[in-house]
Length: 353
Image (cartoon, helix red, strand yellow):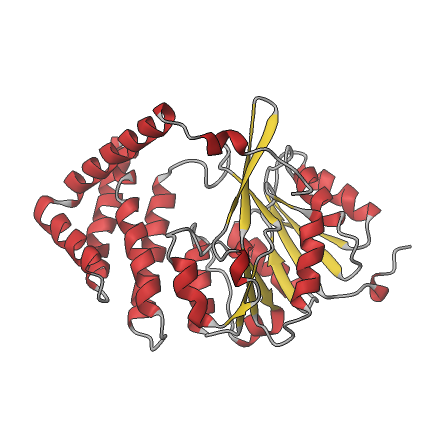
C-alpha cells in the first residue's frame, strides 16, 4: 500500500495529456528518474482516445509520487487548472506531455532554488530537441545565459526580452503555488495560445523573480500531430485574441516594463498576419476580420516600428501585408535549407550535457 502522507511536497509537476501515446512514457520516465522524494506528479488524462490513459495509470500504480486523473477532454487550460487545484507542493512546474526534462538538471534546479527562499517565480534557459533519421538532436537556448545565474528582480527583463524569443511559454518557469493562488492566476479555458495571457498576468503581479542558468526543460520541436504543429483557424484567431488582450492589459497598467512586453507582443502580432495566407481560402474571412479589429493594438505604446506596421496595414490592407510576410517567410525557409549552418548538425542529444 502506497503511503502518500509521507511524501514531501517541494514541487508539484503538472502534466496534461491528450492522445500522446508515443511520447508520454519518455516524459514520465524523465520526471520520475529525479531522485528527489519531494516531488509529486499530477498527470491529467484529458479524455484521450488512444493508450495514453492506460500508460498513465500503470505508472501511477508503480510510483507513489504520481496522481492519475481523468477529465473529459476540456482542453489544455482546463487540465492545467485542474492540476493546480490538486497540487500540494510549494512550487508548481507545468510540463507538456510530449516534452521531457533532463533529470540531473531538474534535481540541480531544486537545489538552486533553495538559495532563493523568497522567490515567487524562477525562469531558466531551455533546450529544444527533435527526432530525425532515428536520432535525437538538441540545442540549448540561452535566454539569460550563464553569466546571469542567480540574477534577481524584474530589472533583468530587458536582457531576457532582447532576443525576441517566446518568453511566454509557461514551461520555462517554476511558480510558487501560493503566489498563483493569491493572485488568482489561472489559464483561460477554451482558447489556444493561453500561455501569452497567463504569463502577462504573472508579470503584471510583479513577482519576486529569479533567473537561473539551469536548462532542464527539453521542448520537442513541433510534431506534425501536435496542437502547436499545425496552423488552424482557431489557433490563429485565439493567438491574435491573446496578443491583443495582453497588449491592452499592459497599456492600461503601471507595470514598469510594460513597453518591453508590448513590443514583443506587437512583433508577434505582425508575424501572425503571415498565417492568414497559409489558411484555406474559405477560412480567411474570419481571420481577416479579427486581424483588422486588432490593428489598434499596434498603435499602443511607444514602439515606432509597431506604429509603422499598423500604418502600412491600414494603407495596403491586411491581406496584402499577409501575402508579403508569407513570401518573406518562404524565402527565409529556402535560404536556411540552402545555406544550412553547421550548428544544426550539432544538435545531438546527450543526457549528460
